[in-house]
Image 1 (tube, rainbow, N blue to C red):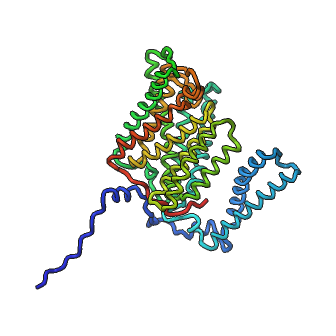
Image 2: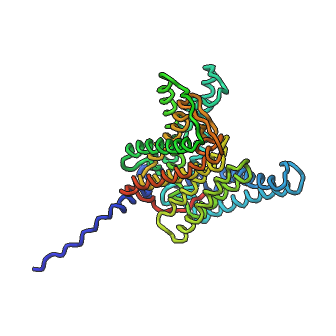
Image 3: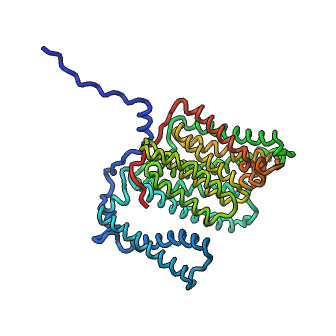
Length: 467
């Protein structure tokens, strides 16, 4: 009797492939008890495509978007006022309406040809573009709502107004911001076929260890920067500003404040946005978003700080293009990192006292935080590093932070000498020395956490962003 031939056992996937699968957003199937999609289709579409009400709403949004782009561009070339009978003003208004009608027509055509599901849903649920727009709208709504409630309570309690930035005011403001993004992310996660809110780069191995190592790295990096500036004579120390129990009370309060800052900014940029853009971006969308930021900065931002945005945009252009041409696996992660890092620098241009070095440094450390997701598997290292950096800069050493000197800081410092080395009013982040510290931070991050390769790139984009 011949022996029975056993089928070969499937090979176990390698460790890296298993980690890839753990971090890859899975194509989610509809929940068993979820309402059928045709109900959603009935709400949004009819026999002629999108229903009239939704078409009117999209048309209004496109008009506002076109005006936000075209009018500042034209005003920068030739000043005018809306409502003028000058040919340029009339042409712009006609062009705005035409572009809005054209955009609505294209969207309605897509709905009629490919269906509502294709326009709004992809293999990972709600498409990335619609997800980002929904998240931004909900976060803004929650911030306005919670801010109004907090302001009303403050007036009822006769809280002092216009007293500058204090630690308590910062805690309240950042608490509102954190609650807003948590609420927005939870609702968007629900829309994305019941995805967990922790899926936005908040899972991964050894999260507590990574958080505390991030705290240590942030304090050590800022201390190295301040120490180098003091050694070179570009920063002078004065007497401590606090004594006794105030040292510990303000340390705890500022610790809470900057932990909230880290949760808000990293939860938004390296959490939600990095995850969502990774699953739904390609090079051309990334280029369009980065280009829009550069154009917006050129038209609306005064001063030299915007050059920091231009530099980070140019530095990311060639690597992202090469990844796109090679069709490299994981290209979506780095294209998303290019967008979120540039955006992180761009929003800092609104701070008082920022120079181009400080803006570029903000964007560069944003990229380091993206790398930390790559090597640790989550955003917890970035949250800890961000919180400790700001705490050491603002409270412990008492330096300016983006032009702001906090009330209730421990040590007292003052810049000295050339602003290129001292940072001037911007503080240590505006010193050219910060670039070397960020590079060392990146090297240390990869050397310590990259050796074990606990995490891998999130899967390449499986869909194009639509929105």
